[in-house]
Length: 368
Image (tube, rainbow, N blue to C red; front, top):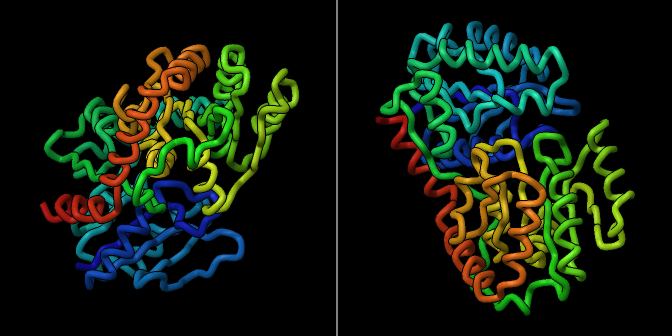
């Protein structure tokens, strides 16, 4: 098949996230299996306008905002009629391929934005974006959709998408799970340690994790907190201020944006990972930490509730407050047998979340 992906970011883009990792793993496997795979995406500083990576082609046009118009023009002029399938990847904003691609086209949606608009954008753009999303979802609701979680599927059903047109594929992680799971005392820190891993931005809510740490620390005197992830702007300064003003700041380490080897090391050494996002497509950092023998405590939100089976592979906080997060951290770290059971289950489940399964699911979805 000849398959074209439309996505405003590729894996090399400085703003790339988990969705881009999944997309390019699929592209790579399509190319490996003899398909012609192409990604039409946006430019970024220092990028090449065209290149071949792992057998698939990347074409870059426009910028973060202009890419939607530029991709439309480039497709009409150079690519129309040359692909058997066009995949409109909706990463906040769709390319609206439905209205100009005459051949087969489908949607790929990791998550809907919804309330994230009010965390990541300022008024009135947040309100406009929230309303616009409701409108364009209804315009696209007749299309087949590939997604990565049951939570996103339920979101799509609310906007009129037909259940028979929604296909869930497995997520995958870039890192290799531990082949054998060593005893906790061999790989974990001497002091109980919780880990926040993710971009320091409002929708990830690391401030909730810091406040939860402060509360849990009152009962777990030797508790430590590690934060890993880059950030900038007003919210980043707010989080750095929270750390500076924290009574337990000497027990908090901010590592900044870490490389893959460092992230794996920290995931392996930490006792628990904590995630308090507003919403996710899937909690990839949760599964990655699971693969290194570290269970998670997460908020009960889209994506995170899919990545964690409550009291089986981790803990889900149903009140979504720092107090609830702290209580679950205390509960797990004070119950050695319960903790060890979750650690083993999380590690085992992570081995099922891989790109081989994702690719097989994806093929079934596009062929059906």
